[in-house]
Length: 376
Image: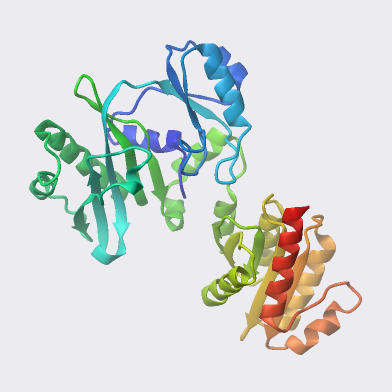
């Protein structure tokens, strides 16, 4: 689960890491009631990266400019997400920007700390960051990080600050089940202090049950129902959103990934990875349809299920009931194959539903519908 900047900075603050004072507002009218010490930064609050390059971070020299920026940002979308709020912070007088993060590295069987003497929006275009592998026991060694930093960072005072911050980031990541905790940029100010000018925190969604406070804060901040991913996890579905428009409901990670590849080969773009194999029940399938029906970017839904133990005649009856109940008019393409698949057409007869026996044919139809919808 990717937290918004505001939510991530709350965790950094709790860990003893300095962040700029900020105000979270949901409308230009709410911002008008605030006293601002301009210039300020107006930042879109969405769980999505690349806000700066997409126009989601704006410098405002006056209160009126801040309100205009807030109005514009709140009407935009970033990575398919519409901001529910903006974060307004003082515009920092930054002397230098560096990069610091802690992330899970499967190859190291634990966390790895990354540092670059050059931070900011173009971090990915520069030299690879320095790496300090911490290992599965999460044992942070200050002397080892100092040795690594000395190879590229000339500022001795900054090195010591990074060592102290690095320890806190590792403690935060391990105690809060974080996959990534990233500060970019870590800003060195004119007075020599450092502050987390931005924050990217990604938590392990499978550990959500251990973070009721974070989930409650997310829902309170955005005043919304639990996010689709949280609903999917609660229903034992595995959901990962992608950038395409072909919604996919499938069973088994291998089948799901293979179908995604075929969608790409057919000229389509999958909108998600949605695996129902842990809950192949009427409730699980209904939740899957509800998630995709309420996602605006999904133009068509492809149901690709191959049953070994799962009997396709039972799945077909559930699908027929769901189609009769659902209010969405998004087209659905079926490919149900495997045990008792010969009975699917009998069950679908007279309902207007059609089942493809060949996966390639189903994928081709779904991709064609999505392309037609994109042109409409």
